[in-house]
Image (cartoon, rainbow, N blue to C red):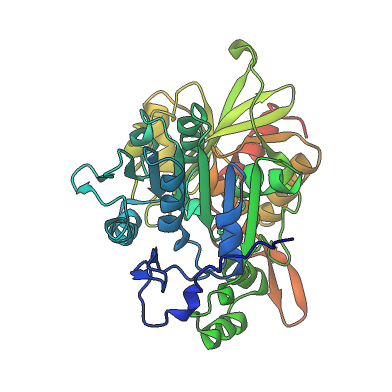
Length: 421
């Protein structure tokens, strides 16, 4: 019986003098592009799932997958409409040239419109480069493929819009990121994968899986960084800090807030004033003794007049404010806002932590996932101070502006009888 002879694929690693994406011919005359991949990159490329996540340590080679993924999807459907999204415009500009260069070396070589940031392939496909800083610019496209580079830096709104743009064609989405925060990437994607969602594939790998990554630098960062931070930034693992204060905060994040009759709601908010630091405003409503949060303002260099100009800063809300800025509270009142001072006293910080912990553990605070990204980030990283004896009973006083605003809201609402203790 005749046996089939296997055709050997060219070993890309045998081309040491080639640059990433460079064309070369194999001995049998076939044309290839040089993309040496490590084990986990290959797993990403071979995944058949609709949502594929490369969750990796910095420098691990996750962003390098973007151009190869584009080529792979174009070879399946040469007329594919593909969108590439970065968190902010400067990151998009940095990512764009490498992708264009590889397309120019491929069979899809076409023309690049720099003003519109659209690459038109010779086969009829197109690649659209967009920034997630304004998700509305993504609207209008119906995509076959989407790529979210460093997605952990993006707001949930961007993920929602990109998903919507892909739903009509059941388009595939590649998500590449380091796990920066416990945000939508953790709650909506990673946890769904852990729970067995059959549409999601998460491939995790550390920085050293990239053979070009400096091992000495890697080990130096291990010594310099807190263990939890090192695990997130270099091992690609979601890890909470030691001594985190609000351990059960994840349970507060909800996918939606149930519809309710507006006339039965009490709208409340908290304000932590800043200028060189962020001014933080947290807003929501109370219904049946449960606090629902869905409104966040978090900006530096803003006056009270700037804050009042925000569309989501409304006159129907009772605002409980940091009492250090009496002039700002007076300005709010003069402009028709319901503004009240909070009480600060020796020990009020620990009392506020106790209030929030009680609400969290009793399920009496619900936060619409993605609506308050800075609060989510602060809560995940709010820790007790440590000294030579270990963890103390005092919190680290930094990166807590949204938390303070929420504390003022809860303290004021309880004191006024709007929220039962």
